[in-house]
Length: 407
Ligand code: GTP
Ligand code: MG
Ligand code: NA
Image 1 (spheres, rainbow, N blue to C red):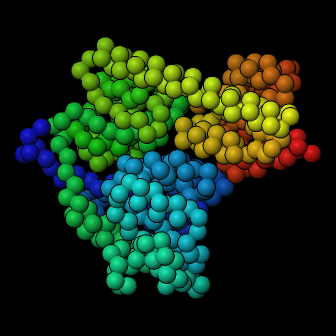
Image 2: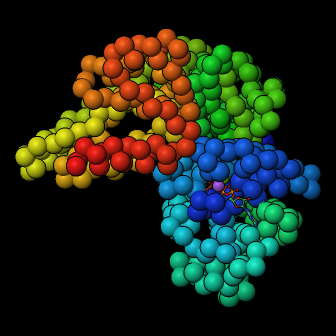
Image 3: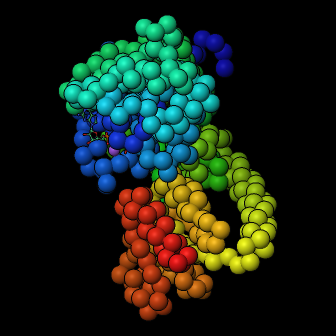
């Protein structure tokens, strides 16, 4: 594309930080929304993308979970963003996921702004936050460093105007530009299978203009864009660079983190997707031989290996990934979790059939439930189904099950 097509685009800002430090509450204040109040267990468990207007300019915000299980989501969030806001509660200071957030931002090479939140609290100690972050190489400007620390309160709204101004100033420095007339390039930040809608992907457009009717491919998924929904669920005809948008009409659920592009024809889209599927199959094959070799040597070393076989079904890809990652870590010398299968979508009869084929296999549902028929089938074949809405409940339960096996 020639230079003259480059225009200013909305900055993409990812909000990261330790659990309950107020990321969603800050965004709620900015958007006059009430997302945090409706969250199961009071924690964020998926990536949210929102657009806000400030001084006639659009800003895209990506909210990420702070719970330790969601490392992948945070890493992805840092990779698509222009600027990371690390939220630190002034009454709690730097915590493990604060450090992790700083690491992700450093790895992505993007500027970091610190929002020192909960300043309305009497126990707020912003100087301690500054000292703790300075130790991580994030030194405040007023201490001779180069990082903006903005004191805020998501409760009273104090400092939030300053935070938005700081974001826009930083965006100006970055001179963010894109070419809306180019082919679409977007990044999938979350994906799921929805009843009545089929595969759904939330993407952030990086370049080009995405339109209804475009033929697109994202990893193994392809299709003609049937509808685009903005962050409020309203149908839109197009999405510009920097904007988040929900895409309907894909053949499969694309992997989170995949790049979505538009192509000339359906045939090309199919070919791309087929190649990607083949590549993933090969990778999976080489991985599974490696894992079983590891397991084999462990078994030899330990004499025996008891396992808890599980089937995981979840509503969104990011959660599935987080659950798999956490369950793989529940393991000691004698017992481990064996993930027989993991997928997106409701619990089906074939999940029950698969579970009943291996002994003691349980089905774990996260934000998904079995239908009445599936429940009956499970009962008659002696398969246990456990469903959860909060990730730490699931992890705690499986941990105690594994502990039970060990006893
Ligand atoms: P995760 O997404 O689960 O990591 O949490 P989060 O960082 O999004 O925090 P969330 O917005 O869920 O807020 C956690 C708790 O802190 C809630 O009870 C909020 O009401 C409270 N909270 C958030 N910001 C402030 C603030 O500025 N002042 C006070 N007093 N409370 C706050
Ligand atoms: Mg949150
Ligand atoms: Na929370």
